[in-house]
Image (cartoon, rainbow, N blue to C red; front, side):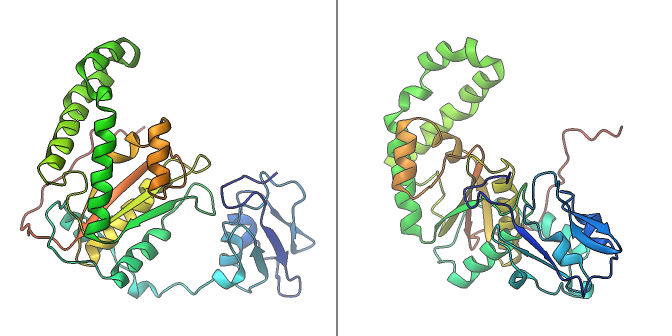
Length: 305
């Protein structure tokens, strides 16, 4: 039985050209579904795989003789391409310099982000690893300040309609049910956030999406791995940095548009196709500030077993 996504309910099909196959076994070693095995010095399809071919394409990509083709689950032999020479790939120092250079930017120039730059960001993000192919990550692209401001305005109106959710009486009522940590989160973050979002909106300031010229929302579906939208958004942020854009991830909007009838209507109005366990808005734009110093970052804890 195939593992379902919103894009497919079928397994992919594996085709083997026995004349080209040398039985080297490389495809067998990389297939973690155990869809392949060696028989009489040739690769054959295993009748009892774990899930059925998920369409990762590993076997097709590693075969040195083009003896395997995978079709289905949004993959075909036409998707193969030659990997770049390692001399053209960033080394560690170049990568760490990019990581260190990136800071969260909320001050953007009044300058549109060109369509070709947007397409490059989306292309880079599409290569993010995923829990299960084909990716179930969806993107909502707000590619102008007007679209961004309209979305922010609508979101603030939506918040005002549910202001009871941030009220002291509701938080005190719910404290025994959702615990001390969640109560502190609401009191210390969500209540002030609601206040600054809605007050800023009334004063003509966009503190939701920061008047950015480009915002991309990465979200999943009920079938997708919850990490997939976050990983894709991370790839997009680094791509944006490499293209000269500042960016900032904005985590406050997504959880507030997931549950309830109002949230569903809000999603439908803005073309958001699915409720998603995890998701992330990322604002991009040409930075109106320039940092000359970075700040060292550390994890909360690193333990070795």
